[in-house]
Structures are given as structure tokens and as C-alpha cells.
Image (cartoon, rainbow, N blue to C red; front, side, top):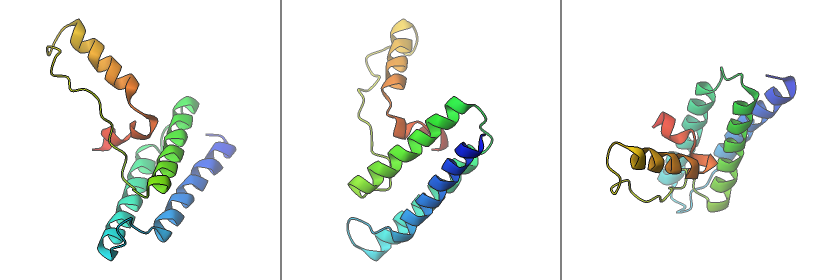
Length: 122
């Protein structure tokens, strides 16, 4: 990791903790605010810990873009959780064969960047 990339990652990490410190839930309830602050902190720690050994510059760039997207979406909608994605169910394709593989491939490509690592840790 280059020094510039390292500074960018550490800056994002600090930014997340500053956001968590000032976070107010949309409902305004203290219990919700505390729960959401804890979620922000635990999610950041989990994802940064998971990706600490990543050395591929393209993958690092993708992780940084995902982090920035999740920050912006969270601040815009005032919801710290990843926004759900609504894709058609895989009920029509059989569990094997070309149609199933094609549908899995389409679902993978249609997943937004802010959800790439969410499924890995859930």
C-alpha cells in the first residue's frame, strides 16, 4: 500500500468514527441513536479488520469507493445500514444449468458498490 493510499484509508477510518460520534437517529430516540452508533463502529471495525491484508491496488480502490459510497448514502438518508437492493427472485431458473448460472451472473453484476462487502460478513 502506498503512503498516499494508507493516508486515505486512515482518513476514512477517522471520518467514520467522527460521524459515529455525532450521529443522531432519524427517529430522535436515544435508544435508536445508541444502537445505530454501535452499529457504525462495529461495522467499520469489522470491514477494516477484514481488509487489512489487502494488497491489490484495484481491490483497495474498490474498498475505498465502497466506503465513500456507504458514508454518503448513510449521511444523505440518515440511515447507517446498507440500503436494501431489490432484485427479482431466482424462482424461475432451475437450480442447475445455463439459466441458473446466467441469472446468478446478472445478480452479481447488478449489485451496487455499497453492498459488495456486506454479504461477505453477514
